[in-house]
Length: 228
Image 1 (cartoon, one colour):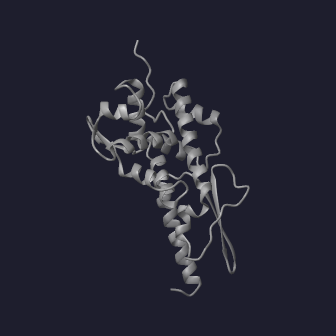
Image 2 (cartoon, one colour):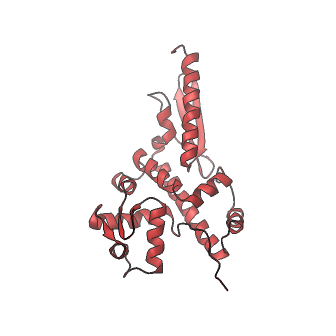
Image 3 (cartoon, rainbow, N blue to C red):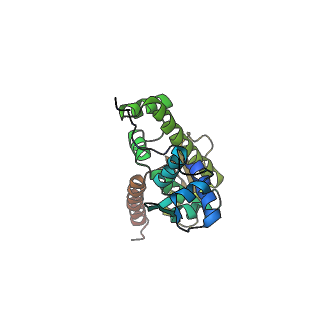
């Protein structure tokens, strides 16, 4: 009887994945390494089930790149490692990494706003072919990834990507009481406050959609202000 296999997914969260990628970078920077040497840099004795799972997870987050036996730390990983926690550059890179796994994109699309309970997401994973233990591991990796993005977003409210779309001089800030998993920024203008609320984690497609909407919003605002 064939053994049931769950769909591919990162078996660790983004926080651990970044720490692992950093250990490789600190040893060899962006030099190409064999799979076996990469496993050793990650803290394993060699290529085995555990080391392969971590290597695969780093690949799914876009932190390792390469083909066949040659692997190296990606440019995306360096952007995360190089910039301090809470900085706009690091947050943007983290958001890109968090959106890379196909499974995480599917969860984000199925449950926008991150308001779904663990039980609801677990049930969704099982209907997608995950056996219960794998669904639990995937759910934990998903939650840990979201928690990392949320924690680092709180370090520097001005680092919100959406703040770049507003006029110079606006001062963004998080509003106490924002719902978990959401970023809320308030911009004080002479006429009053502009409030933007958005999920902490956005997929690449959602970021592009938001950019398009904000472009239309700013075009209308400029026209109404007599700037066009």
